[in-house]
Image (cartoon, rainbow, N blue to C red; front, side):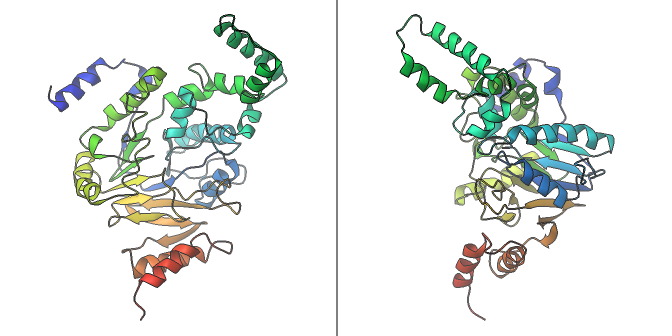
Length: 368
């Protein structure tokens, strides 16, 4: 079957859920702020939103008609994913009332929490879900597990190991990310890819495999995958080349660069903004500004000093907001990149995480 015809048929076969008819394209937006991976660091999320004048000291929306795009991976690694999601969910409504918008996109870690890949959930994260009934909830979960063993012998050591793997708060965490849970329902309704004017936003990237798909199909297929975890590994949500996981635009080779024009043309954009693959600590354009990386590893699990940077697109012009100061993005990978990195590093607590990149670039560039 012709690939485009196959995809058209898939669209017709997808369940007609109301949540899946979401918008994925916006035009005429004067200001967009894009924030990368948070990874369980609520304080850093608050800090970066304040740096872009999107929230006030009471943590209320103050961004007016600005559109905030958070490109996924709010969850995992750090202990406060729950607080970060609660903030974004509240700001969605507040921004809408002001004529703005909050677009929280699905990252691979949100999907993982939904389909049960919990490798990166921290102990502190589980603890954030614990309450006065957590011991009882865990006991009930253990009884369910024993029933699934169908009479296999167990001893005290077995239970101790099981409890070590299922700390207090685990049962509540799984309920919250389940189909009826507050975070499970929210994540299952998120877009993975959106377009605002001439910019495409997503977590990982668009690979050659999905270069000629459309936004609606990508988003619907990913949400459909999450409805049944058995579909994930064979579907788009778990595909290494899919929008949640692909790193090629951040680590591109000649083949990827050659495909980029096709991707931009198909999605009718001038540039693609991605998270997922972190930089040394600054917003970084690639491939002549056609790709912009915004994951600066903000969470303090990466850098105890904390990194604060996001992307601002104001009337179509992209700039970095580095610790709240607007910086012109570099026009090349040589002298102007050095200029930009030095300006950003001067705003960081010493030593800047950019110091190594600056030294390497200075060594490579010819001396004046």
